[in-house]
Length: 201
Picture 1 (tube, rainbow, N blue to C red):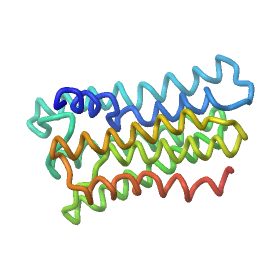
Picture 2: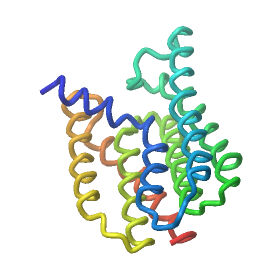
Picture 3: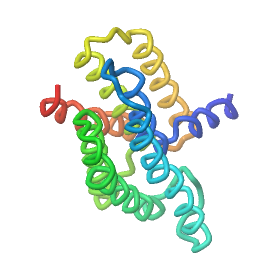
Picture 4: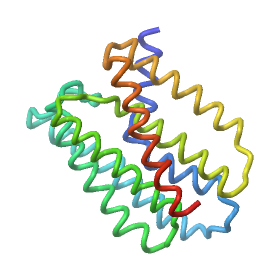
């Protein structure tokens, strides 16, 4: 059980949430998107939100500033979060304006708000679950896309809701977070996406 739940924590690491939302958009939207437009978003976003953070993690680990990809301590979380926010801002101001996709623009704005909230809570000595923050963001974004495009993705939403519960279970079982930190993490991800949909829904 422990091996399975740890694998869940790796598979649904918050690192993959930005690219997951991007791919979800292109899979769900009924709008025609040329391959060139999709590539102009997916590739740079993948590089900026997955490849570069992985490189930064290994640099921080060599410097003794990070011990695990799960960032167990408050101190370990600060620098990766700072880098994460900077890279998300780069996506919003440099990548997305080239294709002018409002849905993705505000999805990333919501991710930035969630990350900034997490940093603020770090200064208050509170370590919320970033895994649940990511899952909360993605679930709300999928709900918004379903409503916006009037596409029935009930099965997909059901699966992601189940997966969210599984991720929460893994974080609690592995004693990485308390129940309050897990619940807070989910709502820190969920609410910014809920508040920003008024600008594009």
